[in-house]
Image (cartoon, rainbow, N blue to C red):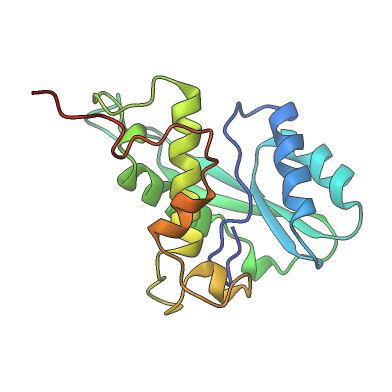
Length: 191
């Protein structure tokens, strides 16, 4: 996620493993035109893919959270308390004051709140990965090109210079290939 334009640049549905980290980082690299500062969490499988994709052409750091004891009370759905964080420069010359995962963490919350497929223990929870992927693709397209960001006063795509006009749902619908079944109007009313 681009902190300046709030643009979601790349995403991947997959495991948190080295193979998926490589696919995600390679895709991210293919979408960038300039040197960037990148911050990841402390997940070690990011290290080799970032080096392989960017080499020395990146200012890269990791933000490793330090956890304490679990909060008292309900523990099934509660995470551990974050008691600190360590900012570790990995390559290049990252500005340590800008090292943050807050934008991505907030976006993850927005996704969980906005898509019922992420709400556990409900009938809307994703059961098929293909449907889950479609829902995310629609969400990210809407977020980047249709939804006006409150702080920016334009969409993230407009702020980043990817488009000069506000898109709408019909624009997204037009991107769906004709061979894909469209549910709208697909069922006739039975008498």
